[in-house]
Image (cartoon, rainbow, N blue to C red; front, side):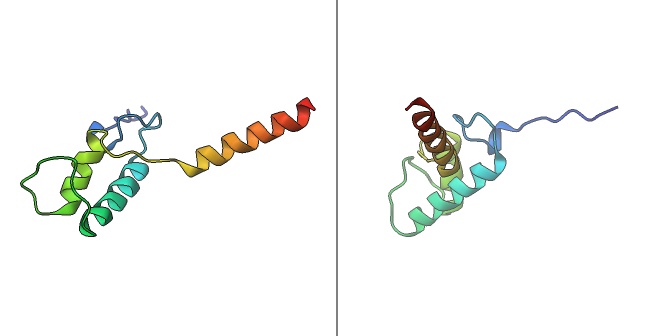
Length: 86
């Protein structure tokens, strides 16, 4: 019997349609780097660890990100449609 895969909401970005844990980690890591460089937190926190703070910010959807692969694919599709149309 196949195992049922359960997606954990603790390691997912709220607006990510794929619920990618990998994307969550990358976004949280980049935000942690920003916090280490002096950026202010979006949340009042008692934690002094930037990784904990960044993960909570990402979980709550406070960190905006852009998926460059998706943008490139949409741009290529748009270009293809322009070429076919005229």
